Length: 149
Image (tube, rainbow, N blue to C red; front, side, top):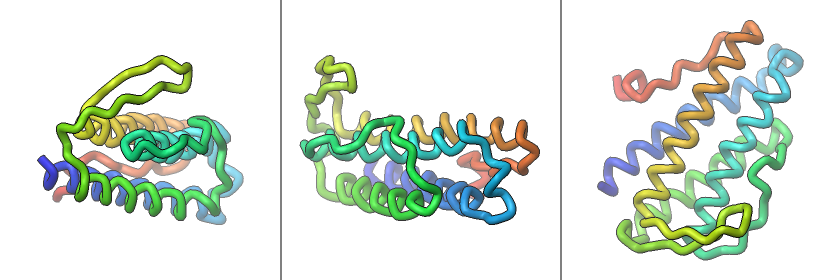
């Protein structure tokens, strides 16, 4: 299970970096919509929050906080490193008790949270592809099977 989750995080990281590079492409700077900028920040914020929940750290960001385009890559790299550290060192069956942003308590296994991070990112990258297409920008094809080929 750990090896497969590692591959999924590598895949997600790979395409997040490609997307971030598009956000920082000077030719596209004024074409990418604010909605797309918000979605990219949301992907990164959510991963940071979930990593913090697993580690038992204080949550220090809002899930919809917007980051500047130049901040995105550093945040993505930190998130990836933290998720990989959790994957390497944590028990995937350990139950994490946490509160959502509304203060409601939940509990889930580490493996389920890690998979959720991947799934959540994939979902929003799909939204970004649609936004890019609607804005006349070639979307990033980020299907897992393309990555594995």
